[in-house]
Image 1 (cartoon, one colour):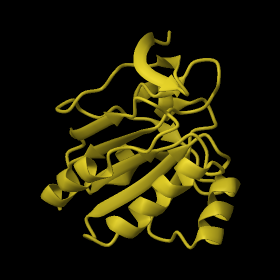
Image 2: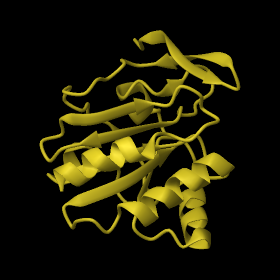
Image 3: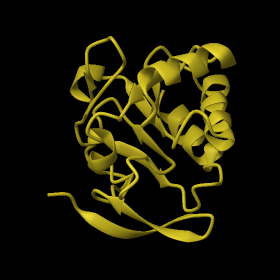
Length: 172
């Protein structure tokens, strides 16, 4: 059974109901299973013990999501070999790959939550009745403890990059 919760998240001022728990700094990150196209499914357990950033967006085909993904590719991807950045959306893996190829995004890995919304439900960022993810950033240390959590209050706006980047730099 999924947990539905009213949240402070809105889309162009309209309240959004999210599915899943509201995670907080200090929580252990929940496991999930997502698709990477023709590659095997990916889970938190399969990602190893690197510092991880989950850059969560609605779709690569929207301007704010595009900007958000490019920002992480440019700003932090080269900080450390022990840092892995994943853009998570409900886009098909092939659309994610097309977008990154067209935009020259080569330091961020994509994972797709279109099969079952496992990530969205586990991280409490699935928009009820839409099958899309709200906007957010989750930073995990090498032990998969959440060190930064941002559920962006207004989905049409960008996240607080600097807050996440400061935490990431402190971990790598």
